[in-house]
Each structure stands twice: as C-alpha cells, then as structure tokens.
Amino acid sequence: MKYEDICKDGYPLGFLINKGTTTNSDNLNKTFVSHTRQMALLQKETIGYEGDLNSHSWRLTSDEGKHLNGTDLAPFPLGFFNASIHGDIVGRIFKTASKENLSIDEIKCVVKNSYYLTGSFVKGDGEGHAEPTEINLDIKSSEDQSKIKNLVNKCSKSSPVLTALRTPLKNTFSLIANGRRKNLSSLNESSLDNPEDPYNYYKKQPSPSKNDFFSDRIIVKTGEVSSGKVEPVDGYNISKTSNNVSQNSNFNKIIRTIVGQSTTKSSDDIIEVDTVLGLPGMTHFVIGMDFNGFIAPSPVNIMGAAISFCFLTQTHRYIHHQKFNIEGLRMSQYATFKENSDGTVEMLPLDTHLFMNGSASEEHNEKLIDMSEKTCYLHATLSEALEPNININFN
Image (cartoon, rainbow, N blue to C red; front, side):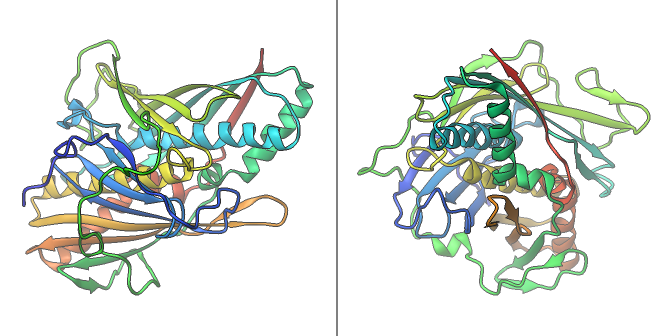
C-alpha cells in the first residue's frame, strides 16, 4: 500500500478544519477524540477534536527525524507531548491568575521528559519506559511569591495533562483487522462497540477552514538544528551503546531526553514551545497552542495527538522489523476526563482502537498491538504514577 505524503496538498502542517458547536474550554467533563492514520514512511496525521465530534477539529501532522530514517518534515511524537505540558500548566496559570486578579507578566518554562527502551524490536521483547517530568517555571510577577506558589500548586492539581502523568491507568484497546474485531488475550478489552473507523468516517481529505481564523504558527519548522552530526539510531537492541545518549550501566538502559522551551507573556494569544530531541543534528520545531482551543489546538488536544502518534510510530517500526503483512494503519482514541467538585481532575483509562488491513495471521495482528502498547513511551507514561517535579523561580 502506498501512503500519502503529509505535504501533498500544500496545506500547513497544522490547521483548523471546522469550528464546532460544543467546545467549552472551562468544562473538562468530556472526552477528547483523536482519529489518526499512518502516512508516508514514518509520517502520521491526526484529526483531533476539542471534545466530541461536534467540537472544533484540527489537523496535525507528525514525522520522525533522520536518525530513524524519517523525512523530518514535522515534529516527532514526543515533542507534541512535551509541548502539551507547557501549554496546560502555563495557560492554566495565566487563566487562573486572571480570574483571581493576580498579575503575572511573563512565564518562561523549560520541560524535560526522559524515556528509555529495554529489550529489542527484532526479538519482540521491547518495552518502553518513562521517567518523571521536570518542569521549570521562571515567573515574572509583582505579586507576593507565596500567592504565586499557591496558584501554581492549584493549577497543577487541576491540570488534565499533569493528571495523565501522575495517574496510573489500566488502558483499554480493541483490534479491528480487515473489518472484523478480534478478541484480545493480553490487553484490557474496550467496552466500546462501534468506534469510528477513520477510513469510513471521512469522505474527503481534511482541508483548512476558509471561513474561520486560526493561528499560522500551530506547527513551525524553525530551521534551527542542534549541533553535531545525525547518526542512525539502532534502538532495537539496547545492549549496543552510543556516544549520543546517556548510558546507565546499572540498568542497561539508554535514556533519551526531550527538551522544550517557551516564553509566554500575559498578552500572548498562543503558547509557543520550541521542542527538540536531545541528540546531535536534531531539528527544532515550534508547536503552538491556544489554552481555550479557539485559534489553535488546546494542550489536551495536543496531548491526544502525541499519544496516538507515538503508538503508530511503534506499530510501524514493529511491522518493519517483523516483516508482517499489515497495512492501512489507523486508529480512534478517546481520552476522557472527570472534573471533581474540589477542582481536581481525574483521567479515565485511555481507550484505543487500532484498525488495520492485510493478510497477516491473527497471531501476528495481536502481537502487533501488544508490542505497540509495550514499546509506546506515552502508554508507558500513562500506566505509571509519575509525579512531575515542578521548580519555581521568580524574577
């Protein structure tokens, strides 16, 4: 099967498709829907909603760098997740401060995420792992520092993205191969009977809205490249070492770190995050978010895109290394949140539905979804309790 390139229509890498009718940014008692599909090589496209299918919808694209033989045209999946953390905590601080009549002039934020893989794609025993996120906030404000610290703590507890980090979830799945649903023996089976198959749900390619304004900085390839020469990453057998990554001999793991930086003023409409993978020669991308989801995707929408992109990257890599006859990868993903009376937020198990075609055996089809779940760094993040480390400085 020949997959389409994400740039074939000449559209922006991220754009508003349709302005929906049910978006309410202040209500987190809802399910964020993401429909994602495999495109050329390691490229992916998602249509992410600010809630149900009647809400604002956005097209976002992802790719991998040249170290994984990607085309490097769009941000890598883990960059989206890093950006979503910025967007949610920074945007939430500004919005809550405004409601409480607290003045904050500027927030500089640096977020570091670290992940590692054990085992091997080739051997089929690969497993992804995540470490606690580090969030560094440099806040410019004339307010009493104790008030700002209390505000940040309050926003941390009400943040759905940080809730996803700290809540261990038993996520659910379904597998639909050639139009038929298969019973899963290892993963938690979803109770949803009729998830949307993106191939059947969309009758035409997504295109930018002609009637509604949206930011032209949702995804920007900045042109900045980290120093050093790109080296192909093995990554499939962690017994091999590399000078490009941190090596911990006690656990025989290779740690990869994603760094994102943002500077946001109180007058800014969107939060722009420069994110990059911590390897030599990596491309920097800016990902822009509107906390309310009006002129750019919300941080929670970006988080949903990140998870689905990461999951499909792992399915692609596993198919490649196991030489399975599987194609037409696409998925529907549902991220549901519940807002409590005290302002805290709960995240329910992420619900993922993988669709595929091909002549692979049922055993290989199920092995694929099992291995994708095990090696997906963001499913690893969701399955563990990873309390973020938040550091606050003032200037």
